[in-house]
Amino acid sequence: MNAKILFVFLLLSGCAAVAQSTQPTPNPNPPPSPGAIVDPDLGNVEWLRYPHWAYSIWADYGNGVGTRTDVRAVGVGVRLGRVLTREHGSGCARGTLEYDIDLTPAEIYHLPTYTPRGSSVALPAKNYYTAGFDPFVAKWNFTSGRKWAPYVAAEGGIVFSNGDLPQGDTSNVNFTSGAAFGLNRFDAGGNAWMVQGKVYHLSNASLGLHNPGINAAVQFKIGYTWFK
Image 1 (cartoon, helix red, strand yellow):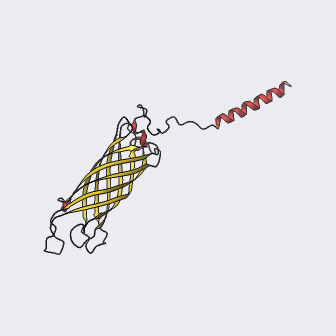
Image 2 (cartoon, one colour):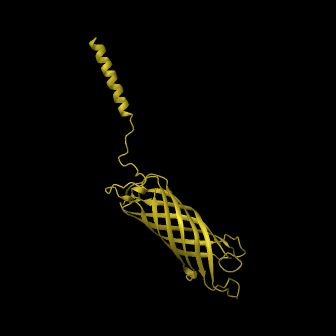
């Protein structure tokens, strides 16, 4: 009888141990919930360490380089982004992958007097009113810090203008591609100020008879991001 009781006791104890071992281990650092105050010991960069939505407003200023230093652009826009992954890597390279889309409802390009290649006729300076969007903004966020989070990004987009840009028989549709480096500075509420620099190229991809484009330009952007 005692042997049967001991056997039942051991069987129940074993089942309890197995059940306990199969329980999922709680995440010691769960992702912050919307509106949560992030643990100051972890730092507000925690918002970039887990999948989250990001909503930004920004303003930019661009300037041509090389032979087009007198080309200028200024605009405003919004960004919708999603942190897609948890952290990968180690050390300073540890980070997360983010995908964004930029919408630029208003940007003004100023192009100075321009003489097309092979022509002796100078075309007058002109201001262009443009709108566009960047459907491809792939970012790597470096998340080893607490309040500061730099990132690198590859960007590609399309620009629609109210005339052929640049002057001449070109096209009112152009494409942009570039590489960016930016920095997020998180505040106490878990949102972040953003500054970014980008080097980019503008071209109509031969949609027009001529494609002088803007071979190289730099753009500086400042904005504010809310994480949800």
